[in-house]
Image (cartoon, rainbow, N blue to C red):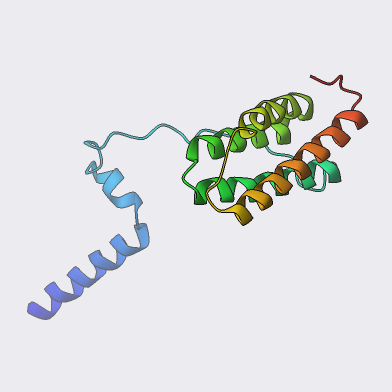
Length: 143
């Protein structure tokens, strides 16, 4: 009698394991849960091979500048650069204009350490040069 009950219990457990995660839904145990909204699909970003090398150079300098700004507690400037960088990946013309706007705000940034300030200014210069080159290639008028 006990052996039969244990064998039957093992068969039921085996079936439950095979059914897996669908079992609670089929029994109705998951009814109280609120289903989350389906995940938001982002626009597919172009692969780096689809971006122009000058744009890739500008994005890499942007990443270095963002890291430096975050390191010095300037998260708002870093966030603005991140958004302009995303726009540059999706639409180069509007991204160049957005990045130039951010660079105008970065002109007033002063870092405490002199060597960091020189590195920062060098990176800003590299980014400005890359943006100017790409704008010229795209035949955009200067802003």
